[in-house]
Image 1 (cartoon, rainbow, N blue to C red):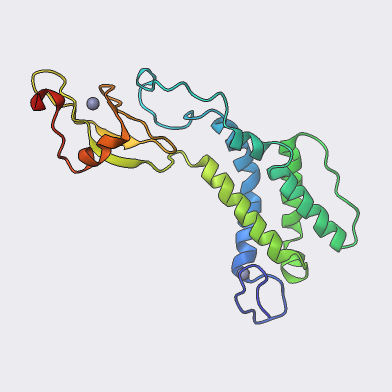
Image 2: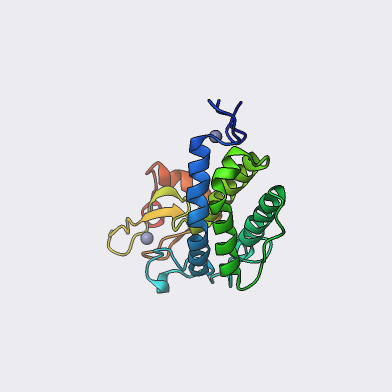
Length: 209
Ligand SMILES: [Zn+2]
Ligand SMILES: [Zn+2]
């Protein structure tokens, strides 16, 4: 007998190992709060330390659709409610009520699954799929909540601010972008210059002329 989520061997007949059961329990407890937190991530950059607003010149997108999708019907609430309904059906119970705000529905569905966790881990035939799907859902939510998406460092700004005073601010390629603009002095660096910047072999235009 093996865990139906992670395939680890089990010493007694069950659907989930202790680790997968515990992980599912923690994620079900955390998801309702994370749903609320997502509301503060609807605007790009809202929760990020992007520096002085005047220096961030790109017009922000009106809304993050990936966050909207997670918060709407079909997102987190539907995954949780469908699993709660499948669990109740397998126990011979009627379908759960899905009423109220999405926040309340998420709380009720997650709580309903948590309250039956012992039975799920021992008996529920869908337990492995449930545990894996909730783990994937939590992974997506955490990625949406991550305040600092990965950026690529390409070196230091080589702009001459006047009189040989080199800017020197560190330059980063924003996630999903091919434009680098120095946040300190506003100099643009197209991709063709990144390698030169990164190797520190930059010759300021003024010095080369
Ligand atoms: Zn497992
Ligand atoms: Zn600069």
